[in-house]
Image 1 (spheres, rainbow, N blue to C red):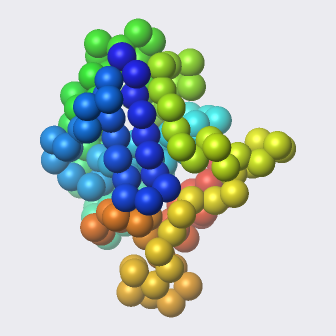
Image 2: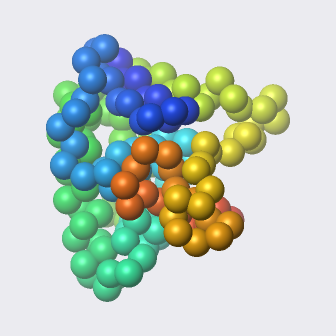
Length: 152
């Protein structure tokens, strides 16, 4: 089962060339985008929850993360994929680069292995100097992404 993740432009996720349109929230899509682009390491669940739901209590944010993760895994057929697209433990989540996937952002990876950076729409978050991933209502603030990436 091939998973295709297009993040440059309006985000599109395809499984076996079929567009996945049944994700229940943009946060599930933002979670997949973050995990796929930052696939070089496992991410602590509490950090992901704080990044995606910064205005919620930790318990609420962790519950939202569990629901978004379950929705995402269902939509991308993670339990049926061999190997699965996501490696999960009780403490962390990591995108499995050994899985059958394609990510358009990989085409813009520098020879050093560093990403040129996520495509952002600066100013759409309503705060000068910050932005969100294009096409995601209530998306991940770029500053939260950069901050999280720098603490690992």
